[in-house]
Image (tube, helix red, strand yellow):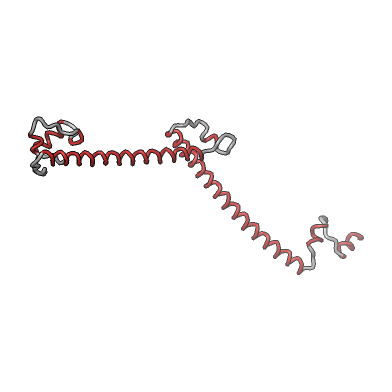
Length: 180
């Protein structure tokens, strides 16, 4: 803060507390006066100190307001996280069963829950990949069945003949062999 050398030199003048923090700050201000403008009258000195005090007060108020908003925002997000965690009789409740309503516990339970969900998502991806692989294999096998059925039709054998008569095939020659 800008304090005139004339004010510091006068022992009867009481400086406002907003101009100095400690006695060390006051000593530093009195010894390093090269950057401090010289004030000629006490009236202008008191108005400048009042201005400095007001600026400092506004800075503190702004900082306090900013900090209050930041804390409020953090607390709201923590509450939101807690509301997203599974409740009793919901899947994954065992992950957050021991939840206490402190900020640290909510964050810890949220991290555990997210990790568990990630594992399950990876597992689901693997299962989906296996399902797609099996589906492709089924399509390939169905195509193979169609090819084989087409070959059977070329040989004049229907699929019903093959599936309805599990025993040996009867041909005119085999009937002749049985009689003999």
